Image 1: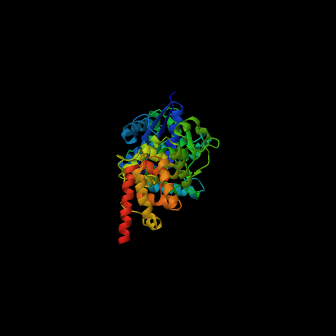
Image 2: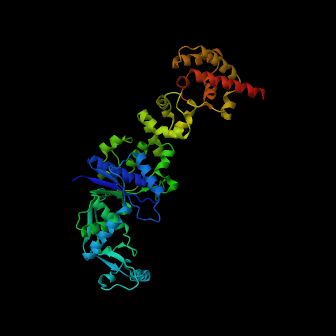
Image 3: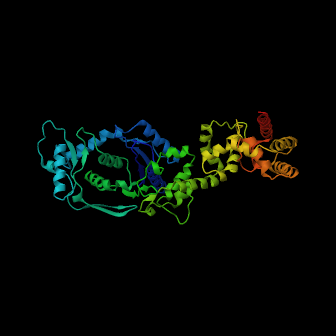
Length: 469
């Protein structure tokens, strides 16, 4: 048997982190078993489903690297198949038409509450033999009234529901459109889903889906229900906790590998290891070891995880993700330093790719002006003379290497009896517009001799003009 898992989001919004974790768990399980991972877009809610949401889901899955093994399946394209099996259940007396009006159903529920009972459908239309003129009926599934519906959950263990607690589920609306719990069953069966890993908000749906599958003469898949992700305050995760689109994390400069690492650890552990590459996740993850309790989303821990990946990931892989941010910032890499070298220089001091972009743009684009705070602090006193000395000595350098650059900086600091900062900081302002950069010898080596000289000369002219103003 080929293991087949699925991720089945509804395109009524963006792909959020809870959905991303469910997709990750399903993807990991399928890959570990040498199986198939399928993406199904559950777009039967035509009023709320949008093309923008479909694209957001596809973009999010692609960015995360959770590639499906076949083209996405769109549930809305399978409606005729769903209706075919509803007709089959009707023909086999495993479903029936219900003509009850909304007022009847409301009165039924109120009476049950008044009697201290659970408000459930009382099956009155099971015995109806004639249609009600002028009424478009719904279709209800005949739920077994006795015994239990149970399964061995991959995460939660043995789960059982008393069938008397499950009333006759509506599987088709009065307009003939099939309902969620029915179409999910048909699609899972037709797509050969062997293992269904999803959030535990679906636990109450599972016994109903198992009953329908068995009524269709099929064996249900193995289920695994992962706990919900909560905010740090224990409330259901929302935008105020950071529950935004997966693609928003890309925009904020997170690496997809870091986000996946954080999500896999949000409910699962492997000893004390915190940082996992995708390959290590595939090696060590065990869905059976996912905790039963809800995990709490911690943005600070996510930022820490991202920083760890920035520092340890292959710089060429980092560049693949960084390129999007550089393009967005309008950075042209032509004629500048090797971006791989810049990544190696910057990654220890940058937590996100956005921060790396902001701190590195100057390598390829000269500053259009200077940060006023840095000007007031560092472009004063001997700074102009220092920059002029640096320009003269840098111009004479035949070997543009970190050692020779640092020797010039040290020599000028010593000859002028200045602290090293009073030499290095004016250079930083001159070349970057601000007083923050990697070590000065490293920065100037990356920038190159020609650009260094040009920017120092421009800054000297700026200081002269400011003094004359």
